[in-house]
Structure formats: C-alpha cells, structure tokens
Length: 569
Ligand code: CA
Image 1 (cartoon, protein in one colour):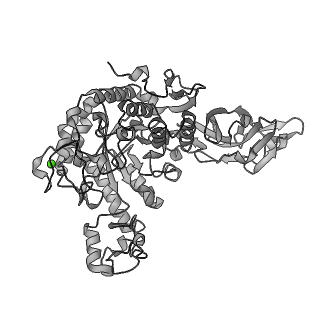
Image 2 (tube, rainbow, N blue to C red):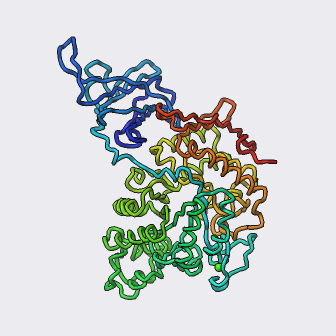
Image 3 (cartoon, rainbow, N blue to C red):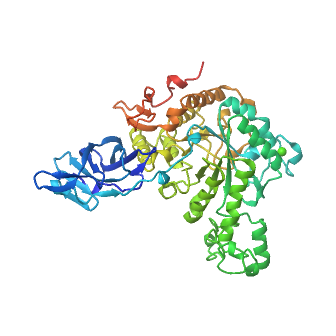
C-alpha cells in the first residue's frame, strides 16, 4: 500500500457540515491502491464497560466509506453521518489491495490492534451550525448572463461618448473604441433576456471610470455617465427583480483608477497628501514610473501588475477598509443588488475580505460573493470570505477536452473530479462556470467556428455542479479572439436565430432541473468505450432524502446532444 498517499485533514474540505447536522468526511488514497476504508468513530464522552478488563473504554462504531471518485493520482472516499451530541472523534481503518491493514490516526499510522482503535483519534470537538459553510440557495438555481455594458446595446444616443463608432457587430474593436452601449440598452432588451431564460444579470463595472471597460474606477459611488445614472440603474434593478432576475455588480477593490480624487491628490501633494497612506508608496517622486520590465528598477508604488495607471489600494489601512466597505454596502442598501463579483480578488488580503463578508451579509441576507481567482481557492472558501470563484480552473479543462482536444475523456474526468473534491459541495454549487468572458477568447472562436462543438461544450457545462454563465453574444453565435476582440458590439440580428434557439433550450433544461442540477453533487466516470457519464444526484449524499436523480446523461465524444436538450429541428 502506498501509505504516503493517505490523507485527511479535520475541519477542512475533508471534514465539514454539509447541511444542518449532516457531517461529511473524505479520505484520500493512491489510485487503485486500496480495497476498503472504514471510519472508526463515536462521541468522545460515550463509554462502555469492557467485560474482559472490567475497565470503562470509549464506545466506537465502524462505518464503511464509499469510493466516490477517482482523480489524476487519488481515489476519494466519503461517508456522511449525524452525531446526536455534535461531537466526534474518529480515525480510519485502511485495507490495501496488497493485504496491508493500518489505522490512519491523528498521530500517524498505527497497527490495527484493539487498544490502538481507541487512541490517537482525530477530533471534531464540537460542530456549530454557525460555523457551517453556507451559500445562497437562490444562486444554485441561477443561470447567469454576463453583460459588458459598452457593447450590449445602445439605448440612448444622448450619452454616447465623443467619437462613438457605428454599431457594427463585425467590427474588431480597438482598446480605446467606444460604441455607446448603456443601461437604457439593457432595459430595452430585458424582455429578450427573459425570453432567453436567464435569471441572473452579471454586469461588468458600471462605476465612473476613464476607459470603455471601466475597470479603472474614478468614483465607486456613481454610475458612469456613458451608461446612465443612478435613477436609471435603480429602475433596471427593479425591472430585473420583477422578472425574477438577480443582479450582480463587478467591482475592483484591489486598485483604483489614476483619475480618482484620491490618487490625483497624491500626485499633486506627494507625501503630504491625506491619501498618501491609502496606497503602497515606497519613494517619491511618483513620476516617471519605474517599470522593472523596462529595466528601470523597483517601482515607486505598488500597482496592478506593473500598470502605473492602476495604483494598488492599501487595504491594511482601516480608513481604506471603511471606505470600500461603505461602497460595498451602499449598492446593496440603496439599490438592492444581490451579489458582488470581485475583480483581482486574489491580490487583496484575507483580513479585508473577512470584514467584507461580514458587512455584506449584515446588509442583505443570502448575499452572494464571487471572487476572481483563476487558481486553487481553498483559502477564500471557508465560509467567511467568498461563496465561490470564477471557475476557470474547471471550465478551461472542459474546453481542453471538447474544443482543443488536449485532454482525453479519461483525463478530463479525473481532473474535474480533483477540482470538485478541492471544495465543499456548497461552494462547488455556486462556482461561476463560464466558458468565456470579457477576459478570454469567445467560445465559438476557441471551437474554430464549429457551432455544434461550441454548444456541446456549453451543454456539458450546464450539467455540471456550479452556476452556468453565458457571456453576452454567445446566444447569437458571436466570435472573437482575446480581448478586446471578444468585446464586439452585440449582434442583435441573430436574436431568435438557430444558435439562440439551442442556447434557449439549454437554459430551459437547466432551469427545469434546477433543484437537482443546482443543489446536487456530480459523479463523473468514463465508460470503457470512452463515453463520459455524468451522474447528478439530488441530495444523494444524505440517505434520508428521497430525491431521485434523473437517469444518467451519457455523453458521446462529439456532436450528439442528449435527448433532453436536443434542439427542435
Ligand atoms: Ca449610449
């Protein structure tokens, strides 16, 4: 037995409360190496009299664990249990395929003897409902639609920026181009979005900024005049809510735009600026900026990447924290938004995000927080910072199988299983699963223009755990290379066209089975003939529920739709 591969950590994604009172434990072993894993467990304070020794000993039970998946190098074992007194002590009995039997305990590996079974146990001293990681149930049934506001629709010519170009969907936009998209354009098309079937709108930044993408915030407390004003935004949120759509805003709290009042004051007054401590400044003068990539030495101040126009905010400064938390709660309390998507969230300190979580949860019950993290995200997903993250780590692998064929079906299933097992299912269920965005090439372009292939990858994504997200224009079959080309003006001529119909059918499928697909867990396997089998279970982890999963969806390698979502011919 490969003992080096045995792994478990209490109070982590290996040992957690899933639903109220229901505890799930996972154990890791090397792939195909172990025949059986059992949990030896009990309440630490329950004892029994040993008739042989006449001594009082710990009263334990054993429970077989189920193998629930296989990753690239590991097998995953799982068991669910309820403890009447909310306390647990435990260890694992591991039986290798080579006949070795060992106890995996809190203090290493031990021989399986009666005495050892009662010693060196792991502890969950007391599990509190308050500490259970919770994510909003509404989010698990949401299909998001991402809007890049400058390119969605121009509903008001009066607010068009100077030099606005004609709305030509075939254009390849330049970095500095404007097309006049705005909030009135979104309002004008809300009925179209409702007809498409989405029930969540995710807006790229709307706040006053200097660029067309608005990621260089000037004023977090106002809507950019290119897009409209606060009254119009309030109307938009209200109209969306009336249609059963949630609203998610995007904000950058890692850095601020160079044209902000705060940074302009620092540029003008240097070390004497009242905002100097809002930033990470090591020396003056601040200009010209020293770019290490051009051999100019260490920059005078910290920035996003080495971008002098985006100075990094000092979120260790309580004044900055309070300012940003006011921003966060202002848009919730005044406009009733339902979620924040946080740009460059991984470069901001955890201390700030914990305060952010507390402030937003106080402002609105079941508020959703999605962080932009492109890599393993366990540190942010312990119930006190984010609900989920932008799940590129998951969806890029779907593209690598379906679209670019870099991964075999077997590798895809193993890698996706590894991703799912990194987090508690309540977090997996609210990951933002998008195949493309304003930051990546469009789905159809990655699929080399093959609509069937693009839609097949999308269909697969819609069966997975996590909130599916459609990037504006995907339903119109739009193409585009990496940004800025993926930000072309929306092609409204394709509304209700063949691609739109198929995306519409896919969204209807997901929403019809929202409970199962949203709340359940996923098991992925590959048949010997190379079919990917996706089994979604309602609350199958809990043997108490009667929810039956729909029949497994069988996935051919290419170009065939599962019957449930095959487009009408
Ligand atoms: Ca406009």
